[in-house]
Image (cartoon, rainbow, N blue to C red; front, side, top):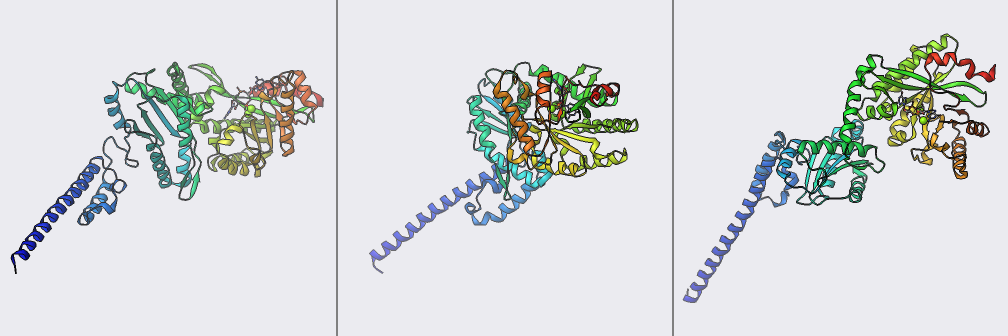
Length: 498
Ligand code: C2E
Ligand code: MG
Ligand code: MG
């Protein structure tokens, strides 16, 4: 071997050595990077699979990776982190916010998935979890590095936007979040409610700000565009609302609630064969409280079914008493959409009608058009059952709920109650009268019986008698009255028959 050849062999060996050193150095860096990410994951105890791509893991670490992942899945979530989504949870949020609070600008946003618990009921928890994960991914895309995203409880998420957002921008966010989600090939329509708080206007301590944000969300739930801000004074009205909700179960036991009945005028017979049962509450703590105030609260607090069961029982007892004394009348009770969750209510009504020995056509239910629209599929099954059993089903406050005409004819409904709003200004507004006539015509065309509500003047009453209307309800014919008053006025209400 010559000197030149030896030289090249040495060069070759040195080059391989350098390449080996570079490779080892690079490989070590990859490993260190992987391990530090793994340790980071361990710290936050998120699922490793979500953050690491298995292809990037050095081969010899795969068994360790799998073992760690199994271990992580069995560990409880760390304080401050939500196990399902990996987001900051309510506990973590408080400490993060306390740290953040010197900041005096920005927008807090509280986001709620409307009726999420029905998704859980209907499709099961694992389906519900997938929906929550999809929502958290959707939310992550809406925030920047400086913002903060947290999961407050089951279906409520909070975002702190460092750059303030106005209501228009939040409406766009609401619209984006509310796009249908596909889970297991099922397309889920969402309704997203957004409450917000402008930090520059309402900067205070963390718990007060979170409380105010909750109030903003309550306001959003009843606002038409589902986005609302906290307003000064919401705290005071919340105090009354909480008192009403907490007093209610006791009030029911202490007979502070009672029923009144508003007779409906039967146009064809000139008589009275129907009435609507309306609840009244004379609270020992707060005096008379109108149903317009406490019913939405009970609905919000998930307590409406407690009232509905009580009302149904009172009405059926009253009907039995009237039947025994020969007074024949059909009475309608108002139900909320939450009452139509599952078969429980329809089965209990049918069983109670038997128990009280009443024929089903003496009983009717009313459900408002707007409530019906919130969960039509669920309502239809229950309404069908009641209708088949012979119970009269009516859509209440028709014309206020923007129902789709295509749906209307599919609904198992006997009667449509045209809302009082249709009567406003019909005396001096030709278009108003035209709209009323069209609503009546539409309902009649779909074979519904038609009742017009809120009739207060003789002129309107006479006008309606000449139209294709079946029943007229309003203070002119009869105001809501107790059962005893209705018995006393029975002859007067049926004077055309005398
Ligand atoms: P609704 O079912 O549409 O009942 C008709 C409302 O209009 C009643 O108000 C009645 O008193 C009122 N009204 C009737 N005729 C006239 C009139 O000529 N002029 C005016 N200005 N008002 C008239 P009320 O009793 O205050 O009830 C308000 C709403 O509260 C009801 O509207 C119904 O949605 C709800 N509600 C009442 N009782 C119950 C109940 O037992 N259960 C449920 N879930 N909701 C109820
Ligand atoms: Mg009603
Ligand atoms: Mg009504």
